[in-house]
Image (cartoon, rainbow, N blue to C red; front, side, top):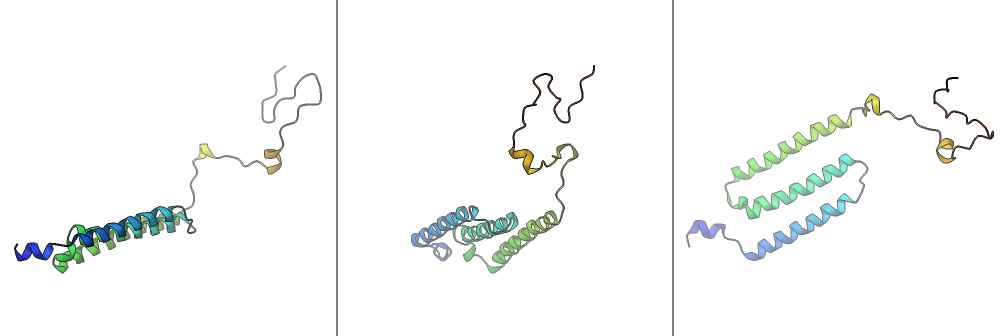
Length: 139
């Protein structure tokens, strides 16, 4: 076996440990999805951080990045930093805007008393009064 192949060989124990760590982090990701950390932005940041740790483990051990020259690790880490920045800036921008509701979809809020009580039947037994907001019948 050459020195190069021997330097990159890892024991199965390390791979099993990394697999266990990835499975635990996947469970943490699923558990964090059920926890409200205050806003959806914070939940997203936590999910992205956990995914970054998992991607780093995969790159370092399964892609053998830890055996490569240090410049490759620097390039990998800097790409993760820039990816985080590219995701962070739109998140900040979206969070600073007012909620836009299209004109045709605006719903008028009803008072709480009208929502709870059903409409009463008219007292007169004859002609029915028109519903509120309905046009009056032409005579």
